[in-house]
Image (tube, rainbow, N blue to C red; front, side, top):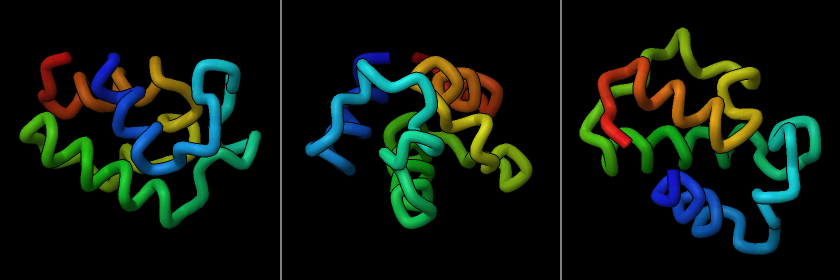
Length: 76
């Protein structure tokens, strides 16, 4: 999950993703950030995240993002 944390920090370095429980609700990630995040996850983990999985609930925390990566065939 450290890789996911690094990707998040690269996208939005001004936020402390450790302290948030809902990245979307807290305003840490917007729709453009999600597109960037999905592209980075796809490239980093060699996966293709299913469009049906790109919903706010799946990007609320490092843990939920990790679940999406695993669900789509990524190994953490």
